[in-house]
Amino acid sequence: MSPLQHDPDWWRQAAVYQIYPRSFADSGGDGIGDLAGVTSRVPYLAALGVDAVWLSPFYPSALADGGYDVDDYRDVDPKLGTLADFDEMVAALHAAGIRVIVDIVPNHSSNRHVWFQEALKAPKGSPARDRYIFRDGRGADGSRPPTDWKSVFGGPAWQRVEDGQWYLHLFAPEQPDFNWKNREVRDDFLTTLRFWSDRGVDGYRVDVANGLAKDLPDPLPDDIADSADLMNGSSRLWDRDEVHEIYREWRKIFDEYDPPRTAVAEAWVSTAERRARYASPEGLGQAFNFDLLKANFDAAEFREIITANLAQAATAGTSSTWVFSNHDVVRHPSRYGLPRDTDENAWLLSGGTQPPLDRELGLRRARAATLLMLALPGSAYLYQGEELGLHEVADLPAEALQDPTFLRSEGEEKGRDGCRVPLPWTTGGPSYGFGAGSAHLPQPAWFAESSVEAEDRDPDSTLAFYREALRLRHSLRADEKLEWSDATDTVLHFVRPNGWHSVTNFGPDAIELPAGEVAVTSGPLDDGKLPANTTAWVVVR
Ligand code: GLC
Image (cartoon, rainbow, N blue to C red; front, side):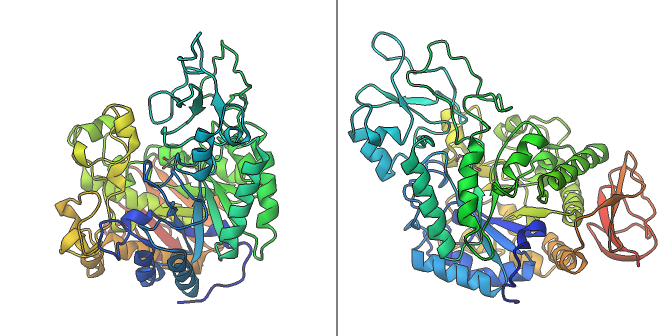
């Protein structure tokens, strides 16, 4: 374990491991993962070799959206622990040389937040209502919602309250949207950022960063016909230019600390250019790039995305980010094990049977993609369980599902629970070592062979592979340049300045590797050659 080094640029090429706390490790035995569980696994994270962890929300919450419905931004959910547990966790992670990023959810609070409760009790037009987005409905009696907008999780984006007014919720009704034109809302978030920064948090992941600024006159024009997915800066709801004023204020707070606190925006926007605005050094500093996550396993697609994003990041004065899996998407071994253009939702609704999943091919490709990603300049975001090669749990029964997407779409969207099933730590026992009790989402029998315990003793396991790749990434890390070498339609080969080559074979036939020392491969070589769906790192000195 190495203690934390003072380095204001630590984030630029960090490997960041996302922890979804309620599904990581349960120290209390109540079926829900907790902060003490994270602390107990610090040695595991240190051995894995990650530079930072990002924790999805652990704040008090009724879990209407897995914790992205926050009751109180400056406390820990009693189900997950206490502030003292948080401090202990941060101290243990820092002692192991691992930084801490927390999730901040500024677009909406939960409907149990004191401010929303106050707003419900306060009259129309009151300062308490002004912290949220309340409007009168349409029609003589105001019984039609102010607009016909749909929420991201399905169903209408407005909910009526007792006195007849409506409030906006771009997500679930339990997630009322804040009014970011309100100074009190802005100031309260500055207080929250100071609160966690003072407790030693190193950075923030900013949820729905493209949603805060909205242009919603009161009353709303009757014929308002904006589409919620118009994301080019002209929508009333998404990716508006004024949102960056908010982040300029945040940046001032971040820069009061040494090293400055970092932030990464979750902003699903239409172009790399729009994304770069969130990543500017005067703003949040970095933004998630979901392009590889959305791409097919295809050399040409990967190459185009990598080239465009590296150029864009350089222009914006930041480093790029890369990600294949997170708590909102189907795990990448499963995506890559399905035929191209599979409708993932239909596959999930079939319980993972239609079309059939090629588990082995998917995992082989996922490992190849991950090794390629870990060789790229920029930061790599990893999602808990991918180091075990976990597939999506696609056959969760309807009655077990928790994601509001499933209920709000009346079962048409299966939702995101399949990537949120509690991790398997041991080959047996209650909840495969997740905790002393059962797990809050049912775990499949195949978790036994993908558990940490099983993979620990197998030198060819995905876990062993991640550990080796992350260890080598530390020793090979070079400045943020990349040069393409011999890229073809089926092979991606690039070189970092220190002679570190990464070669990925997307094609069917085995290929020769450059002469040099083969440092690690994502799968076995075939007579010294690189087989299909495999990546190798070669060091040429
Ligand atoms: C983000 C989160 C997602 C959540 C949503 C609403 O997209 O990643 O999990 O449901 O925001 O907060």
